[in-house]
Length: 205
Image (cartoon, rainbow, N blue to C red; front, side, top):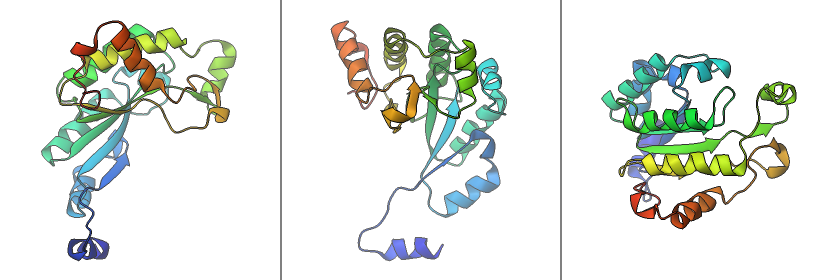
């Protein structure tokens, strides 16, 4: 609170404050506190709205709790920045497409901004055991591009896709996308297939 008061009188002021959390940590009490401290946007690791996929990946929450988090954030007037992840354990390309479309079109979910990440396997993750057993595999480049192109195409005009990769060193990724220009590849594919006019994502425009 002392820092907030100092900021209010500073010559160069911070005008946007973002916090990152999980949907199950979004409560009226927490939002009251961060609103008082000047927070303007909340990022949430949603990852999926498919209950079977959430359960298979040990997310420890239900879709109803995620929905409640979105509703509370809107009541408190926050900008919402959701994280969505393709290629999670138990999902498929077609399932990912349906899941993302629900996130960006079905009330109360549609966020203002999205980080759209493909799952990448890091040493030590529980997913390593699934990969070794053959019960999970990373999407091929063509499959991944197909999912991301579809996702971009259904994103509403008032939504910004802010990222498509995580800042993880390629040498730390065992399998999965390692290309840092993934978004450029997706946009190139969109333009090559003549779908550019249909894309309304703020950042693309």
